[in-house]
Length: 157
Image (cartoon, rainbow, N blue to C red; front, side, top):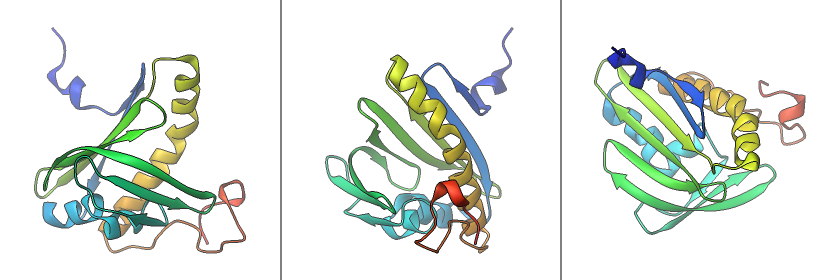
């Protein structure tokens, strides 16, 4: 018989990356970090423009430029999903209270290119979840603040 907790464990398998992190604070505080543009910009992209509303487009800004994503679904206070990399998607969700668990599920196209993209992004997702945890505990923003540096040169000031 399969372990019922197996569905809950983090993994990178097939075309799905599922990662989890325990966050400091209450569920409402966690939702503010993952479900609002200002919250997202505090740990993930450098800026977020738009509203997290189904059918609307949001723009993520990075040091290398920006990208737009269609918001696919929102369950206020619980989860939201957007399109990602060609035909993929990313779902951000929180559940529980003391502790609050954040789950990221990134789905990639079932192609060779999609698998390569998934493998390239796995370390980045882990870093951003570490930054989310730090921010949820009122810790430092682990992203490099110096615009002269980029990922290849490090991520901690």
